[in-house]
Length: 310
Image 1 (cartoon, rainbow, N blue to C red):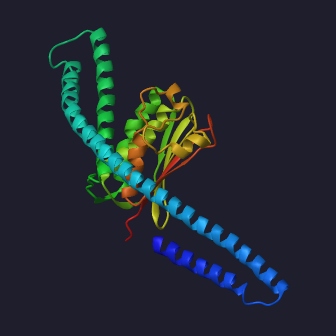
Image 2: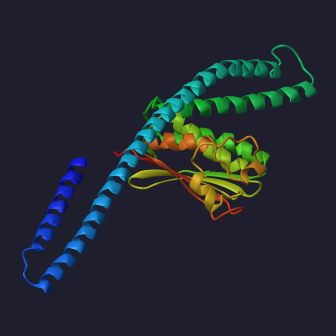
């Protein structure tokens, strides 16, 4: 850049010199005046060009300095992000052991392994068990996020029939919907549909989507339809619940994102399940699509996965 400015400055000075000398090569006053005017114009333009060259050089130097600062800041952010992920992973692993132990002993007490307990104690322990389950799920979500962000999420892919996953969920969520007096229906095609997936992780994603549909539906229905075309299988979960605003739909699959209206029905949500689910599904070359006409107009989540072709 400096060489370019020097060369161009020298050329401009040569031009000035040539125009100046030409003043003495003419015998006509009119010609001399015209050449003098041309020289003045050339000087003005030349100085303007040189000024712009130096301003451009200064601007590029500032950009270069800013780029170095941004690179240093990015490295520091990356270091902090890695430290955060490592901390979450370690902390989550350390939390999971006592939480699992708490769950096990609470379950044994509720089952009467250590003797009969009163109804009031059972009620209190039931609340402890439920709260502990939420903590275990939170820890698992945090561990999954740490694995996803560090690229260490492991999958155990198998060729399975979708019916095997869905049938195991049907009875579970029927009971959950009955407790809320919500109509729950699951419809599946009467044929074998094979997919190549990690069964446990895909089951977890589908379970989370259905669970959310029931939690955020006060009355009406939750319908689950399994459809397929030549390329994909579609698991469509439609409800008559609280719905999602257009603005919230844009951020629904980001970490810790929850709709403003969702806390009214379910305070304990963390906004991590959909983020984890989206990443798991995308690792299976699939996608999750959400549609809602707005608040109080229900929602429709569609999970797409590629079929195994015969």
